[in-house]
Every structure is written in C-alpha cells, then in structure tokens.
Length: 205
Image (cartoon, rainbow, N blue to C red; front, top):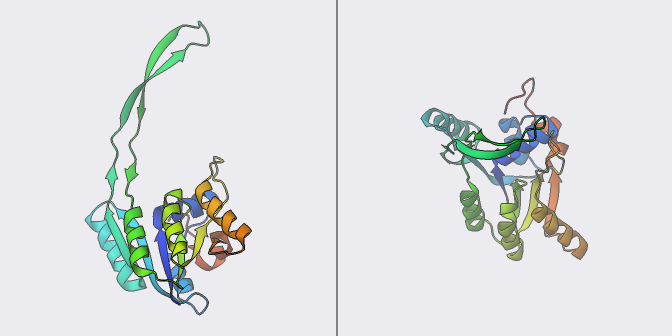
C-alpha cells in the first residue's frame, strides 16, 4: 500500500485562513506528510500563478521542499455591470441603480488533480485529498469504488461570515461510509494539525 497526498491549495488556504485563523507553513506540512505516520510517497500541490515570477517561486519551492507542483496561469474575470431595481424608503419611488461587480482572479486545477489521482492510485492505496470542494465528490466516489481509501482533509467550520466551506456532497459520502461500516472514505480535520503545520508569526498564506 502506498499513500499519496493531493492538495487543492486555494481551497485549503481558504479553509485554514478563513475558518480556522491560521496560515500553513508548506515546508512543515511536507515534513508531516512524509514522517513515519503518513509516509506519503508523493505530495501533489495544485495552485494557479499570476505570472512568470510567481511560477518561478513555486518551481523553486518544489525543488527545495519536494512537492510535485501542478500549476497554470490564473485569469481574471472582467468586472460586470448590472442594473438593480431600488425603491426609495423615503418617497417610495422606484429607480434603477447601476452596480459594478468586481472581477476575481481564478485558476481552477480540479482537472489536473483528478487526472493525477486516477493515474497514480491503485487498489489498496491511500489518498489524502485536501479540499472541501464538492466538485471532487465524483472523483472520490470513483476512487473508493476502485479500492482506494480516501481521507478528506479539511474543516467543517464556517467562516467569519457564517458561510459553510465544506460541501454537503462530501458530507453525504462520509455519512454513507460511516453508517455502512465500510469506511472507505474518512474525514481528517486539518485543525488537528494546526500546531504542527502553522506558519509562525505570520498571518499571510
């Protein structure tokens, strides 16, 4: 049996920073995943980059720390203008207000993670998948059907705006496996590793 880790970096940063209030030291996480308890054979790191400089930094980290980096150029969604109907609370008159929704940087590496997992993992292997994204539910179902034990590494806590970041689709898989007694998929709360992997004296990811 071999153990591999697949890290959806954007989602994991959103969870640790937004829900748990700490930032990950990626070198410390790598050491944890390669220690005698986990002995990960390979650790895959999926993150978008905003240009050549950031890509070089990621490549340097891969070389220095040991991650297998999978990255692609981030793109920004353009600003969107939309009309919003508003009723004045004072005079009850209706008017149209133009609202601008700022575009966001976006780089989705879900396909890369899924393809790597399917190609790398075999029956009897263990996969640590760092994400709370429900889009990976199909991948996880496929893996456990092939005899791979999946550990979903994330948090079920809500963020400061009370938004849930851990998908209901993933919860359904975990509940089913728990109730069936098969436990082919299990949950690992990343907060239990806080003092082993957090970045010291820094609030930035």
